[in-house]
Length: 195
Image 1 (tube, rainbow, N blue to C red):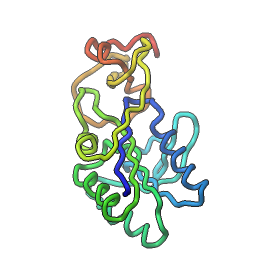
Image 2 (cartoon, rainbow, N blue to C red):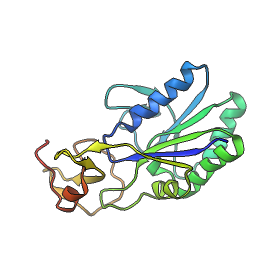
Image 3 (cartoon, rainbow, N blue to C red):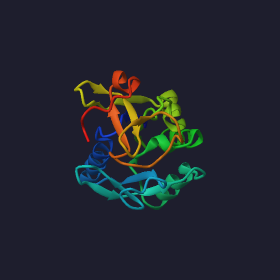
Image 4 (tube, rainbow, N blue to C red):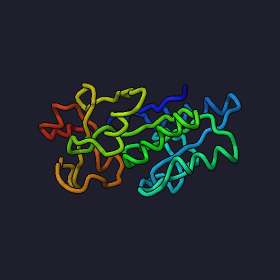
């Protein structure tokens, strides 16, 4: 039976790298994958999943209103898909997460989602919350805080590098806008000495 997987972490833990490696493993065995990422995150370019270590691949994109089940089913009808891999899964809507569960349950295709668990305020993203609730398998991907402890939270930084805890939930940015930290340093808004 195919499953819905959620691989989550703070930022800069290697989620996109692991996704691209997983896709490569399927392709190396002669199988087809479908990669999806959020249209609103175009830091690496439109329709691209890229890792910080230099790996990248073309991907289909989803927006808020897209029916991802239909997108996947249509592709699967054209060319058999053996695995769906979703980057930036925190940006999925709750309905889209349910649609991905339908892909696993109805089409028999495993769906591997990668994304952030919480935002800079420590609150769940809608997509992440739904994945935590209904995914068959949950895996935390670990990264480290500047102090060496496990980083499980994300700080948003202003232009001067100071932590802020208010504002819109989604602001697309890289290392210069967000920093992964342990809970202790998230609570104290301590960004450390990494700049």
